[in-house]
Length: 450
Image (cartoon, rainbow, N blue to C red; front, side, top):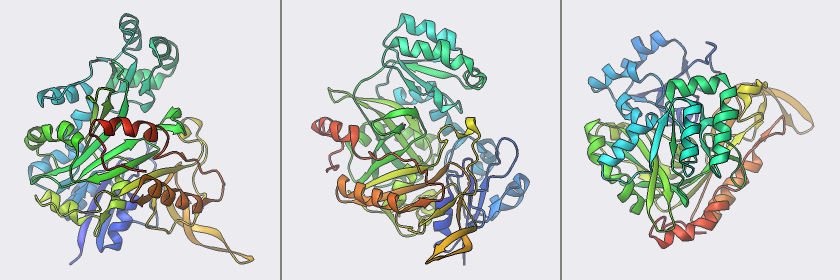
């Protein structure tokens, strides 16, 4: 008897999982939230059955599913609350859990209640009020968006002057940023200096799964952590059996997670200072992207069954422990500004993308494209882009160096007709190589090695 997977998505994140689930015999229906103008997202067309009718989602597919998966936590949570109360099999964030991430004051309160130390912070909804506060508190040079506010409001200033410029002159000129600040708010924090490091885990009715996902993120667009801030451009990961950071940042949250009946992945990121103290930034109450693809590269077997088992209170995730995984996000111009420039990014042929060990597709569809075969051009079904976030490449290895070689060899094989793939070439290198010895001296990240 076939099993049924319903994915309720918001940003076309889950195409890779849907395709892999189909290969393992799951019947899949993917609901991918429409664009703001009401048009349908094209990702996955011809590859995965998609539902575009919200009424059909509620009336038919929720009851059909053996497992309901939420890749994000910014939409459809209110709609799903009655189903959660009836114990429908949902893997992903609830409305209450989402507030830990989207309401930064609440997230800090959860940390404090669990006995964790927190970075001083203050919430604002007005750029002018925030600028006046920074003038009086010049060490508070970190800004983080709350809720669904634009990620451009995530900013770490070198000094008070640079943040005040953003608050007084840059952001107020953009009506969208002003509206987001008023609606969702943002938080200012005292700047902590050290190594950014994170740990994630999977939680369900049976408690924690046996593995901890230690990871280094790279949110800046360019090598060397330069350029605009993006969601994430690539991640270095190990799933380990024992983690000092998990002892500090995840295990203390156990009772709080039990109270809200959380099922899914939670990641806590923060800063380890020169004294070895960990200062948490935030909890991510959902799968991270591309972190989820790192995990896919390290989890063996059926990509979905372990999720259903977690919902039912069992830990069956088959993990490759102590193996390094590097993920690299493959984008095309004008990422990360495509929504502002409105550059046409749909329909560009993508070649050499059938390497399932390394390639995780995202913004692509199936359509007829020109393919070179010998000295002839043949038109046949193939992959083509639907947006600027095309794919994630992963590589694994016993060392960071081996994982990097695996990932970047696969990056070079992936081709696009417009010849303009953009991706960072320093994932797993750069600041990690410099900072890793410092945090290992304090007992963190002990399994990572070059």
